[in-house]
Image: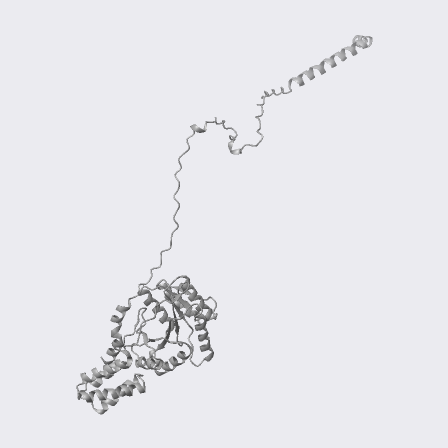
Length: 416
């Protein structure tokens, strides 16, 4: 051991050199092992050569002409070799059309009288009373008095009744007859005389001449409230349409909104236009003026003008009716002024007629509610008071229950 220590001490430098060599070698071996454990470097990606950019025109092309990304370019084909696809034009769809409203077919005047003649038999119940008197055989004085009372109650009028009874008594005395059938024939002749079949009961439908052509015939319809005036105008429009006439209605009764609506409904049923104002209480004269103007533009045959129902004791309202007449005549002459009367009002209706006649020139009378009325004699009374004929009669509530008045049919119905 001592010898080994002596060797180390004498050779110290040699030992340090040996230790240095060992240390250097160990470090190198460690470094090499650590390098061997590192990951190999990633392989380089091959470089892709970029295609040269396409030439750009001066103006940009439509994007729609460029192929989509990833699609192969489509080769151009000459225009003459391109076949255009045949595209069938789609037929336009037809819009659904609303079905046209079916218009009424009003009854002709000729057939109306045949159908309504039987209803006249109940007019005033005069016929049944006379039949009861004549069925007794020879007439006693009491029968003559009852016959006179029957005519008075029928509103034939006192003067007319006395005239008829006087002439009838004379005729019976001259013929010296007591046959009830013959007395009835004589009474028929007397009543027919006072009803006067010679009066012109036709409606004046002649169109007045003007510089620019012809004006439509204008009917001004007047009367108090409750007589069925607006309904009568609607029925008259149907009667005229049945006779082949073109018509325009004028709703100049502006104080009742229902009157304009009612008249419009009557017109629509037969395809007739109605001129009206949407403002309640509008000037009636203006509406009447516009109605005649529209009738002239449309070249119709007749214009029917409804007016507000006037009470005969309201002077201001009657003055307004006179204004309607004057303003309407600025468009053209009024060819007919028809007064609508309720046959059931009797002598009161006669007073109404006289007042209206002072304001407007009444040319004809329309008697409504004549069927079943106890006042059929008003026909004679009003004609004698105004000197104008009864031209139309209403014999029911049906749409076509308005017919020209026939003196013969009326008298025949009275005497049975």
